[in-house]
Image 1 (cartoon, rainbow, N blue to C red):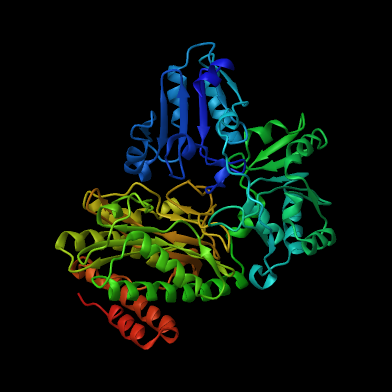
Image 2: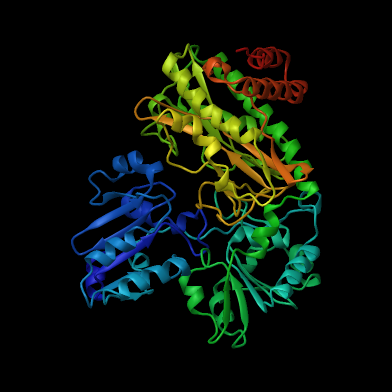
Length: 588
């Protein structure tokens, strides 16, 4: 890499962990950082200079990165603030006047390039977007996926393709926008009522789109679009164009056009191809706003999906308790068993992310994913954290439960309960319409803060409907996948996942998905609340009842009544008896 940099006169090379769509999960073809460094986390930025090679990542991955980067030649640089481009200040402070920094313009957002250019220009440093050196070196690079797209019927979507397009165009007219560029695949999947299989865990088709008042131009591999779907596209004014034609077609739009795009998800390369004199509105996209609010059909389907997912989780934990001590169970075999049980449920297509099955010390790593090198055997005494989700035609799930195998000690029960109080705090909150997620996050952290404790990740992320498991713009306390300006509205689904981690010992996280719903109308306005839609028992052997107040105990007991009533009719006799014991009420 340094030899190529020298030949091209480059003093520094920036490599983001992204693809041209700048989403969370990327195809193997774009997993450049994993190939370069061995680091397998989903978030990171590599910088290579003549004398330095380092990886910037956040606290979720510090321990993992230290282990994976050992003896690789790359050093770990710890982000002080998650999801921020701190490497920019590092480069600006070390590059000499006249130096040249390169980045592949397809893999970095227009917003970040603006920050990078500004910081480097002040130091007299040049920036080039022609920074693709990897293609020359990665000779056994995996090809781009070639899997077929498929329809997402209205029985799941709740709204036709034609109506969605009309809604987007109406909003464009209100904003006086000529063209709307869509670069996030989930936006396009929602708009066109289609899904794909190009990216692990998310049912997405690699594609771009441009919406105008007369047509929708879809840029995708034609071989991946079924004949029947092409015919439907023709009827609805959707024109199919080659994926690689996105830049030239975008550049050929009329000069002085008004164009709406999201700078955070639009690559610098695409942004640079915009027609001269065009008026750009940089904002969260219209489909992102619309799809965040689930319609009645999506909500009805989600409720059914949560029952099915709860059945799978219940059967898993029952199986785990019956199996531990009789035969070996490892983190990987546990995750595999859960996937088997989920796939038995009607409409499940697979996991919504890589399962976090973590025993004892591994549970202290928020985004730990077991591998053959780290796979731990579960014992009869300890803590097991399971963070997993499923993709169903009717919705997407994400649930975390932490259970004790054997009798937990007092420290464990205290930590678990303090984190649980945060989960309950959000579950029970009522708030006025217009509230933003960050304004209520303190409820998730207060019990921990009162005891000098905290966690380093966000509290809540939006969830798609048979789309991405992390999908904004709604968020609680983090902008990783969301937008801090977005208010919480009825129909939004969001996670509720406070936590506590003790390095080398254990981690506790109880995560539910909640649906924002109306509560009441008072003299002081409209009030909203959350309905917890996840259905899975919470391990009360880990709760310290003395730390819970009467309202929290009432909520927990009521929740367990609901879990029992919704799931028990679909369980076998032994499973029902087991779940009845797990959901018995607790007392102060």
